[in-house]
Length: 110
Ligand SMILES: [Zn+2]
Image 1: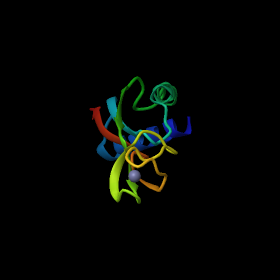
Image 2 (image 1 turned 60 degrees about the vertical axis):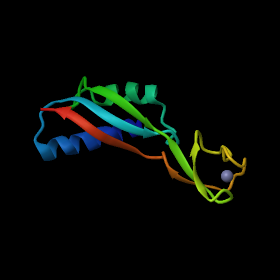
Image 3 (image 1 turned 120 degrees about the vertical axis):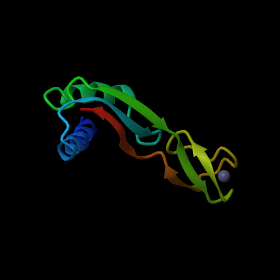
Image 4 (image 1 turned 90 degrees about the vertical axis):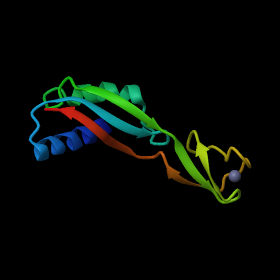
């Protein structure tokens, strides 16, 4: 719920800044490692946005892949979930470099 409120705040700030009256759709980028369940986000956002500029807005969720730097392989590898081993060497000397963030990519509004 807290994350959905955060998204709504971002949308409301953008709406104020750009003088938008109604948000029809928004594209939300969610990293694979962000621990955000897309369906739960959709449900919560609908609830928190009910009386806002984004009431009834369509939420498009764009999943971005997790990335990590493997110290052993000395290269960037794909990471499906936090706590997983390097897909190349099976090691755990990984530094997460991408796929943990959540951001509003785009909005369709008037
Ligand atoms: Zn490795």
